[in-house]
Image (cartoon, rainbow, N blue to C red):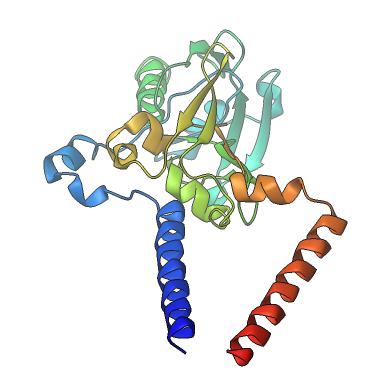
Length: 268
């Protein structure tokens, strides 16, 4: 009986240690409590996406007299690369594709170089380009990204491409939209694939268990068209290497060992 008691205690301790180890492997930001308030304040600035080639923008110009803004809210007749969609409050929002040189062809004004600008900066550029040169009423300009999307692939509950309405998305918000990582996701080796303004793709490895994620805005905030790939951990990789026959054999062996253990305990 003493032996059985010792075995029971040993197994309990082993299971407890295994549980603690497993918890550490699936936790995010394991040492986040060490981050100071000053460090968080340095990363508190609101992220603003920069316009890049291939981005799709919607632009609306509004004035007190609708007819005044009409030349800047044209439909597909405004030129190639321009289509019309219905926006909020019945306003027609122009859709502009930023070309490889970073330009759009804007009605009346002509070519505008927009790459590298934030949404607010482009609004101000359009406002000063048309007022007071072309119109006498000061306009309200609204620019939005139509294609602000991020993709989350690999070991998540719902892999896919997600549209971000507010043009700002943190890495944890992207994971939340994808239903979070599964227990098989490798949290300390997430791959971020990012395309810059020249079209070049860059890859970066991220440890989501490291609290430095919260203080690095280049990681914490995702950009449009970013791709997150969650690799499987070693446990999932080992499972992938086992066929159905091997899995069945291991299960049968586990049951057999359990039965033998029970029989031996009764004999003692």
